[in-house]
Amino acid sequence: MIHLIVAAWLYIALTMAVAEAISPLGSVLGAVITFVFYGLLPLGIAVYILDTPARRRRARARSAADPDRGGMAPGDPVAPERVEARVVLDRAPDAAVDPHDTGPR
Image 1 (tube, rainbow, N blue to C red):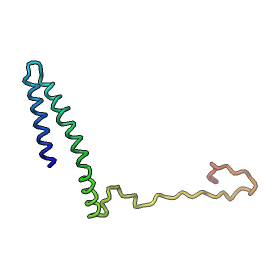
Image 2 (tube, helix red, strand yellow):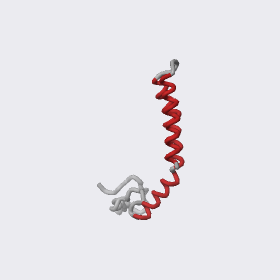
Image 3 (cartoon, helix red, strand yellow):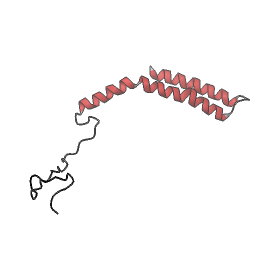
Image 4 (cartoon, rainbow, N blue to C red):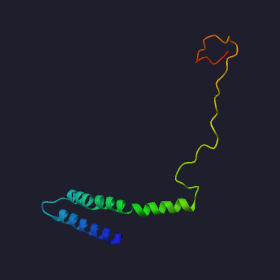
């Protein structure tokens, strides 16, 4: 059904573009602009919007058929190295502690 609408729309837009090109006041550039802005652009938007439910159904069917293909990139299989805080043991317990101090050098 949608193919018939697309073909009819393109036929009408092409007819308008040809009429623009062969008109004594028209030009080939005007014909191209007419075909693009009256034919291809609105038709592309309409087909994209009308095809959205079918695209979603196809995507769900693909992800249901292959669960590993969920559409997301896999995570890093190796966990990053964990950096532990160092404990400074060479100070007196009542001394002020510098948070940027990493211990003896």
